[in-house]
Image (tube, rainbow, N blue to C red; front, side):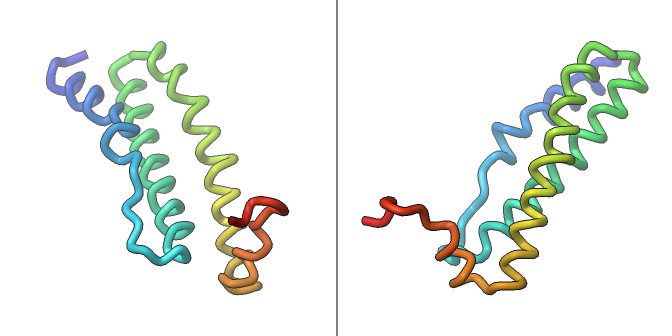
Length: 106
């Protein structure tokens, strides 16, 4: 793999270090939307990295990344989509009330 491309790949693989935090504006309703946007960004970056691995013939790294990509696409994004649809249907106050578990309030 060319040195420049390898450095870019290593930089992009640090997704958890740089893009792993979601800044909260104080509005709880913004968190699911921000999490969805973040997960979408991670999926896009993982696809780019997998494509680069294929282009460079680095199939070992590709095999390590594919489960992450599939899990993010199939599980996390779908769960976030469901939560956003539910919020749209019942509203944020009712959604938050449904998320509370018995015995967890102060």
